[in-house]
Length: 254
Image (cartoon, rainbow, N blue to C red; front, side, top):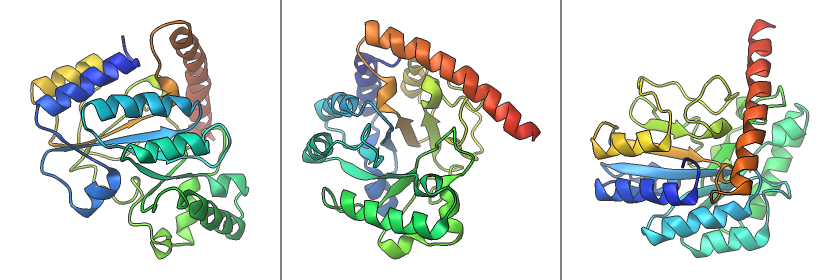
């Protein structure tokens, strides 16, 4: 069953058995291993599920990177503290330009303030934008006028990774690399590897058919044990995906 913690563990065990090294995004940027997977998590909401994923990762001695938003549905001090205590990296999942309605100065001041807050838990060195699909503003545009590296940030995954060298897999929209329902969580790459399910990812790993450098981006709110919550997430996300698909088509035709 896709998007269950049990299946996530199976994926990590398969990666480990095929000699992939697990690195945080920070460590990957500083000194990438030759055969490596970066486990990245965008904690948009339902942040308690981050603990479940982190426990799975701990069981296979994997460290990961968790990006937290500043909003209450993501930003829980107890959860952030526990994620850090398990040896993981945390970073800021920023959306300041969208919240500031395009006011660059206000957005940058907000970014610096929020970055300082998250650094009270961990010496944050990497950040990642929140896609904010309902907002027309792309939060990455903040860096058209400012430089995040001046605040001690060494990397942002949408700017500082060569995706012709690293294969990117994302579960945005509770599907895999689905550009039809992903507003901003997509990258330019030479790879043409179609991903339909976690079972397929596992098979590709077992058959050594994936590149040696991977970034797997998951959203904890997409994952649960199988049961009523899993069914609720499945139904609700499918409804949202229809709305996203229409939104993307509409914006392309404007």
